[in-house]
Image 1: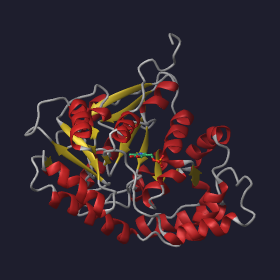
Image 2: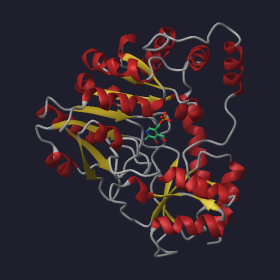
Image 3: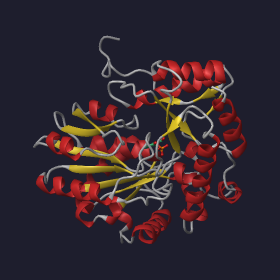
Image 4: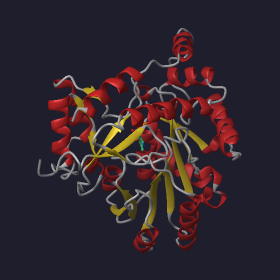
Length: 376
Ligand SMILES: Cc1ncc(COP(=O)(O)O)c(C=O)c1O
């Protein structure tokens, strides 16, 4: 279509790889979703609330009681005291991110996106008529502050950050936030959009949230995902937090994009949530990360450090010189295991001979997959 608004955008790598994995009956360590059962209490809760009067629209900004619960989670976790008016329930983090960008970024603004990144940041920027500015992370997948600072100018409306980071699994250090704050002080019209969907999946290196950085509160939006936190990615529900002035603008878009998020899901989460047991979430995924890496010890893959998320990067250069996309195809077709080529997260499809495995799988799946990977 020659009038396409997004001529450079095709089918996402997740869809392509998932389809190929299905066709070849491969073990799917590609897309980021858990394959183990959801907490039975949550299933019983949604069952019970669905029998009640929960089937009509919720308030536009989300069920007040649920936002109260989120307020307490943020207070417990980060010691930040909020008002419910600063919390918006969203249809997953993706909608939160899209809504923020549409509400806050104008034509010809610049938005800094770090490379590699999760793939839902760039399209909403393009649809605003704004310019995504891609800045590469360093070789350890952490921010290169000299390059980032150099990219900031009076047109920079926003920087999108993500820690724990997909695809690399790296967590930012305190010094990264100090540097970010220093730059934000120099550019008072710029905002920070902080994608923290893996906030409760951090291992030895603790997650630092923007909720712990007072200097950023007024110019920052954080985005969270119940899908990731409670292993219910298909529910597509999350929340964002923003200061009064920013929230006012976000709500203008939210009300015409979704108006209100799925009401049964909101009621179920409200009944279910007391306190998110962050220790259990972290311990469960840490055991999975360690199981996966111990079983991969005898393979020819080199695993990269993983501070958080449920992703493990692996370098395959001892096995093959093929591009990562070709290598993934080979892995699926010849060895029945699916992974994601890391080039899919780069603007220019940079090939680092690295692939991403998702270890949010039951132990049997991880053991079976690693047996196959060790034979390569
Ligand atoms: C970094 C990151 N942000 C956002 C999302 C989307 O979250 P949700 O499913 O809640 O829209 C994902 C999903 O994989 C992700 O990895």
